[in-house]
Image (cartoon, rainbow, N blue to C red; front, side):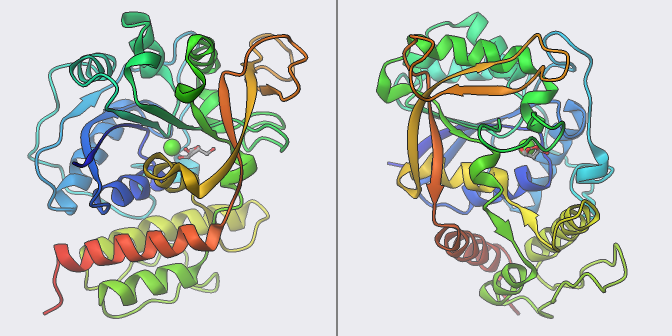
Length: 345
Ligand code: BDR
Ligand code: CA
């Protein structure tokens, strides 16, 4: 039996690759996609999700729209990181698929109640909709089989402010509500948290794009380079490889523009891989809380590793992994998927 997954995304270049990873994983069954405002506004996220399903020739999968704004503050988006539509230099035609008539929060609650103990939740964006779902159904931590979230920075600087990781920065109140709600969960239901400490070790390089194209038997095989004309579009014959190449080129350029090598951190696909196989990471329990006051640190995620607060752990934080093993899996799965979706002539 395939593993049921709800994925809550703010698609997003790396969110798109996370969805691709799940669609390419035979053991996964995506039962619903929640579209959360974050990298781009929620309607754009939803449009991206529907169009990605078209690109992948996927069967009907429910895509639900999330609320417009974070719980307590106005929405901030980041088109400079993810491109005008959130998918880098890639462009999707509008999809003929339709959005669900239930909200993203409702999707979480209804599916978790319908399949108690069976569903893995994967969140790769702000937790706005999950927090709203928890208000509707406080038993969600007990109803889900597992929750994996990408967000936070624990012993590492933030990527949005000196202390804040983006997904938490967008909606700190939501993250606090989720961590608080999981304080009551048994140890085996604690959320598995992929913060920047781990996801910034997941470095994608042009070589990975080459390997993906080769695996998919897509021609020409393109070697992206920082000396290329900015924004030059992919000529890859395989549409999935072409999409990944155009999306990731933007992310490479963004990282390069911000003082890093020509690479991209694959935060969200790593979280997706962990959702299906938690053995990919070493984890450590901690009590996590979110700073909501603070003049400089609002939105910071604080981990109490040693129980100094006298509160039970409410999270398992990923602290170690094998990035090459992850990329082998990504290349194999997405490459094979791309080749099967669009067999070479
Ligand atoms: C997170 O922020 C977003 O921009 C990415 O999609 C990822 O989920 C990394 O901080
Ligand atoms: Ca994301």
